[in-house]
Image (tube, rainbow, N blue to C red; front, side, top):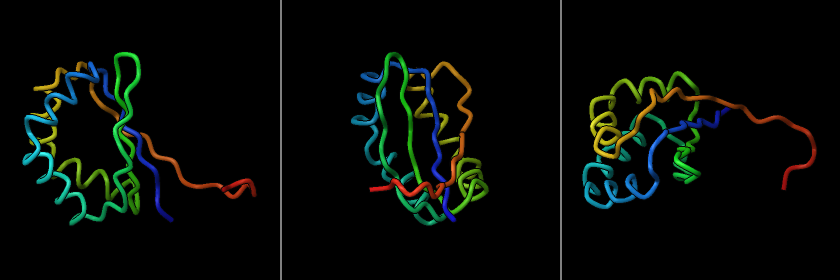
Length: 102
């Protein structure tokens, strides 16, 4: 069963978008590597008040951790350029069957 991964970043969302536009090729390389390493779906980046939430679907927490370690230097460089001020800690959730999905 797959897991949803959430990665909360303390960062100015506008600055992160700016860096993403400036470094599109770099981001595409990281995205391609995530697919190679098993990512099922990169849902999106969600902006909040002074933070961004990254939401992905992975086959397992271990698969994401392997990717994050493999690409840590590149991801760290992007986060640094954007001004991320926290140490991101991924959280993982698995689906529950409560009968109310749509």
